[in-house]
Image 1: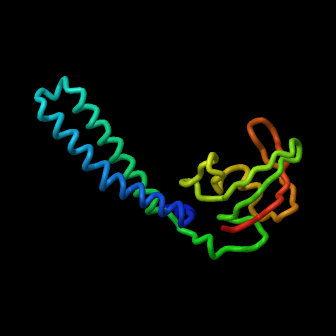
Image 2 (image 1 turned 180 degrees about the vertical axis):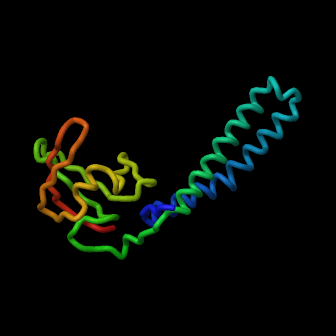
Image 3 (image 1 turned 90 degrees about the horizontal axis):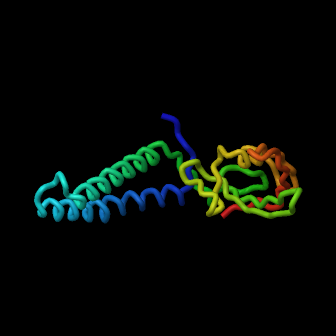
Amino acid sequence: MEKVPMTAEGHSAMLDEIKHLKSVERPRIIRLIEEARSHGDLSENAEYHAAKEQQGWTEARVAELEDKISRADVIDITRLSGETVTFGAKVTLVDEETDDQNSYQIVGEFEADVKKGKISISSPIARAIIGKRKGDSVEVATPGGGKSYEIVKVQWR
């Protein structure tokens, strides 16, 4: 089983979601199933089928999260520092063509969320900037063609 790097924050969020699914969602769905069963004929009972579908989704999500947790190599990024971009670093990049500026934190693939500024360590941008320093320029292969970025800031949370 291959270990996957994960921040302590991402690990904690997954544990919280598992706890919520097991302690809140499971009991709620069980009540829905019991209520739907009390209405009689299950073959044409839409409430029953909807509740069973929710139950299946919830159990699949719990299994998925538990699998991810079991493969996690939790890295405490509060103990990391330096000027070189590595896992956990928050990096500010400037597009050398448009001067657009974006900040990303490099995280594990299970916790990546571009909308929150978290990119997977296996993403093209992260692979291009790992090992680089402030002031370095990098080329990133994107579906729309190559892009050039300058690293303007490397920081740690």
